[in-house]
Image (cartoon, helix red, strand yellow):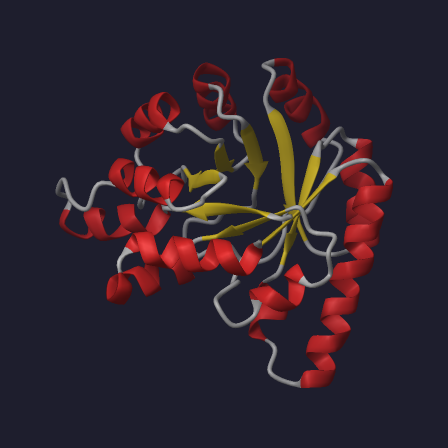
Length: 234
């Protein structure tokens, strides 16, 4: 059975639109956990456009499942991660001018000591990359514990043939990740219409989904939105 990581960044996005105190991401995390979330995912960006440092500190204290911190591989973020010890750190690409994460991280040898430093703090390290065999092999080489497959291309396709080809690519990438003894995770652009196809592959262990859940919650409430996505993933 696959697990669901609920990304609550966009609760904070709404709060930061007014630079106020509501809605409260901490409350959102509790509702998500009570309705089936196996993990709470947040992205502490360098520009602090949504999640703030205080959110991370409080979430580390109150999250009852697991806390997954998405972050750039910078000295500042590594210092924060080592201090607060999320259960997982997911290394992602980050640009100040982007609206959301654009594509997977390009892995290099420079990441090896950074991953080693994080793992020495007893934190699992995942890397957010494209379903690319070379990058997956490199992830193993530099010490990653898990690979989160970037599903953005899949989510944006409309042609059945193109979707079928991308799903096959994701499946083969997942097989290689498992063969190399790393956890298989998927995320980005997944929603209530396209997630089931990847669940049916039977190989992805965890899905990280945020924007679609928060969007649905505007109309149905967060509890129902998380509960329904958990049913799809399970």
